[in-house]
Image (cartoon, rainbow, N blue to C red; front, side, top):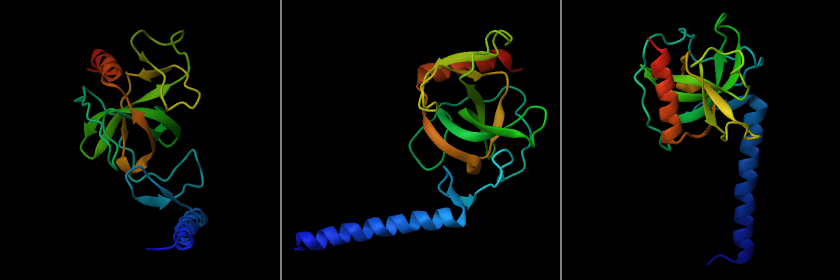
Length: 181
């Protein structure tokens, strides 16, 4: 049986190795993605190096799925952080929380979340209120934009906030069904 001193030294050794690994990753500019793989960090926040060229927003009525589960890959029903391209220029965009609602081949389909009160300038049915969640550090009320479905490559998910409960997910799904053709 190891002495208390040996156990303490073993624990300190493991901690030191973890710290060194983290420092090496930061020094080489490698970041960890939600899928468990790694890639070089982007120098420009507004034009990240995406895994695959963006094929454009999803058009039509998606097959909406609620299937969140704990695992390495993001799933429909989860809120993730991902780079969302501007509608007018897909080379421009920024990170947003995105509720994943389905799949299109290798791509995840999602709707962006916003904390901004857009009801004053939004067309009726464009936004669905979903309440608060871990995707906003200050837990402000959020809305999901249901008239635009973006494609997200799983390797381009930057983080995962939480799974959305089924009741709120179904509210968003109903909004998508009303606006999609």
